[in-house]
Length: 250
Ligand SMILES: NC(=O)c1ccc[n+]([C@@H]2O[C@H](COP(=O)([O-])OP(=O)(O)OC[C@H]3O[C@@H](n4cnc5c(N)ncnc54)[C@H](O)[C@@H]3O)[C@@H](O)[C@H]2O)c1
Image (tube, rainbow, N blue to C red):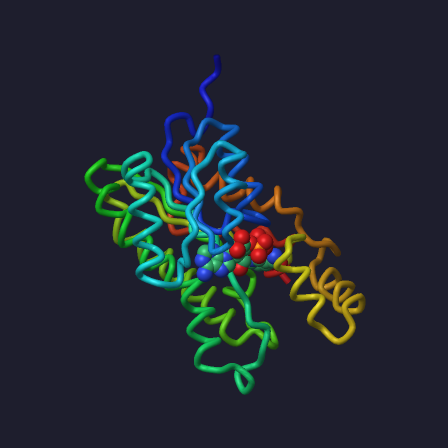
């Protein structure tokens, strides 16, 4: 039987109850991976178990949440070979309407989670002499977008932490990369569009802002994450792979 890309790999994935992470979880299992999924949604337990993964209810914006997720993953399969920090959250507001709490929440779920989870998984990767970390950034981490003050800052922080970690641990064979999606057809985008005064006009405008005049299917982003996490990307390090239909090329 042909070897699968993730045969025997222990993968810690966040944000797998819905959207990109959910599609990715199934893809990784299909390709032989053992997966632990952390998500704040209690449904993650059943969803993961049905797919053959372990779901852990955890808030990745908190030290207690990331520690719980890591501890349960270690109990389940040992130290992860691969970390995919994919959980994300947006408060679509300009800075003047953003509260301290909203700023902290957005920074916590997107950026601080990558910091805390990396700090937990890297010691085991150093011991093993290899590892891969992939974070989900965004076009919002590469360009400024109106009404996304905290989110742009958080995704920008992810991009820089990814580059920093890539350089720090390159010699120890730990690769660190990110994907930078444009709009993706997930509950995240539905919520964003439904919150606008004219949702159908917003939907058309979001599509038109992408040169391919559409948004991504979650599979298109999941495939890019799987590539970066796999040995197919064995010399790809510190890279932000844009999956944005040409958005930031404009
Ligand atoms: N959908 C888009 O248009 C879009 C565009 C660019 C980037 N992204 C990014 O893609 C990633 C995946 O998002 P998606 O589109 O699949 O959205 P989604 O809302 O469908 O999935 C995000 C998942 O993260 C989980 N989550 C949220 N807060 C959490 C917390 N505190 N702790 C643990 N889990 C938490 C949610 O429950 C959900 O399962 C996110 O990082 C998001 O920022 C999305």
